[in-house]
Length: 239
Image 1 (tube, helix red, strand yellow):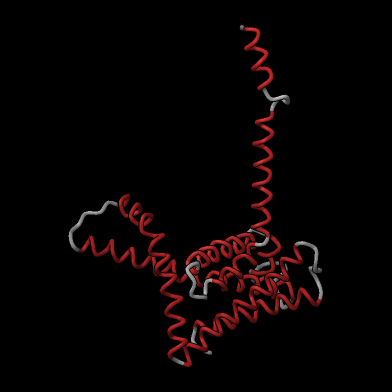
Image 2 (cartoon, one colour):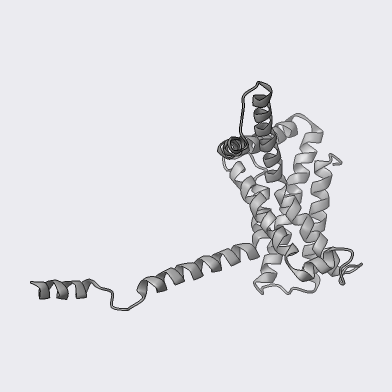
């Protein structure tokens, strides 16, 4: 009987030694590859999410959050690059009236534009939660710092979702009721649409479909800059 059990377990055992470690390694390699791909194209992901976050759909809060994270990741990736910093900062060796500096500022503006919908909701959510905790303090309710952090984490998702949705609804309501509101919404949609198109061209450059130098690259960077200025003008109610 013992021999029968040994034979049975031998048949159930994996044929190849180390299969578990190889499976874990394969999963980890796949995860890293996906993460690297998403980071490489974070600017484009943030741009399309930022555009979709402007429309009054149930997914608007989700798109606002994705835009904030993806565009922030793209900005962080750029500032982690030595060449980008050398072109962006005035003390850098590559800073000046040249395409490298223009591209650096255009990319920065494009990422900032993609973050706007999520950043607005984040600011509103943080302010509302802070106001609630401040009110509790004023009413004499003792709230420890740890409890404040816990309350912020517990309420943040709900308040962020509510704030993002309210922001979109207010923008479309203003567009329906006034010419200025309509102009601002149109400017924001146009700016984010242009930003998405320009970032898509940058993604094609990363994949080797388009050249990283030349007219198409320059067009993409000029479009990013124009989109950023148009978005800024919309936020400042200049259009």
